[in-house]
Image 1 (tube, rainbow, N blue to C red):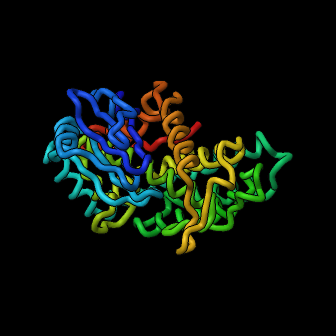
Image 2: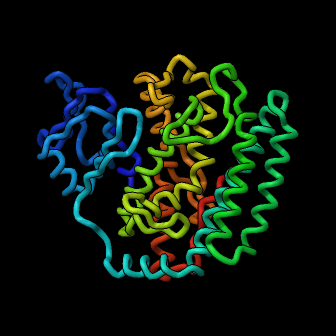
Length: 343
């Protein structure tokens, strides 16, 4: 489990990764800039013009170290992984349950209940800590509306109804999100959620960190033997890791959104670190991207109390724990999927 904490992010353009003994070596212009033992690495994420030797790809596949290739600004391109792991009976049961609307509704309801509750925690903490700096009335009203929507989830008759409630809650949450930004308002304002491409610095940060979350959750899901492509909330689509996106919903507010707000409000990033490309997309420069990667990795080292297992664990292990709990539910070891509620 520990290795899930350790992801190697390589964003230096022109870097080359190779295997040397039992280590991963990162070179640039034939000069060694980093060397890490393979047993300490849980995954590798390469941004842009980064190459890997065939021997390294093979060694990582053998050791269950996923390598993801993203565009320079975070768009997912491809992944290299080893043979499919896990019990085939577990995956067959996953597929059967994913075809059952009743099961999909139950799992989706659990996930969205946690997402909405965690969204309220983000807003309520902002009101508690910064009521004099934000429009506390607007944020409180959005929080109350989301609380009412949480009460509607048990009444949902099918997965589409759950998705509809999630959509209404997301609209309320993001309508209030700009109030949670209390510093650098000239450079960081949030009007609406947009992606593909992100059209402002806040959306660029959100999309980038969501991509990192999806990578970590996909790795955790494959570690426990589930198929990351077959989810219960997100509909099947070729090339989309539906189950990873399902589990990511619980973590968007508590991990990704809070990290974005922290980066801005603590002035760890600034407006100079973003530029607009020819197609209108707003992207981060190298320095800003590295700052985000470091802070994301640091965030994964923080410890939290897991409400279901009753233990303090690093944030980076939450992904594995939730994937394992879902696998236990699919196997029939527990009666329902217990999502992660932030405290």
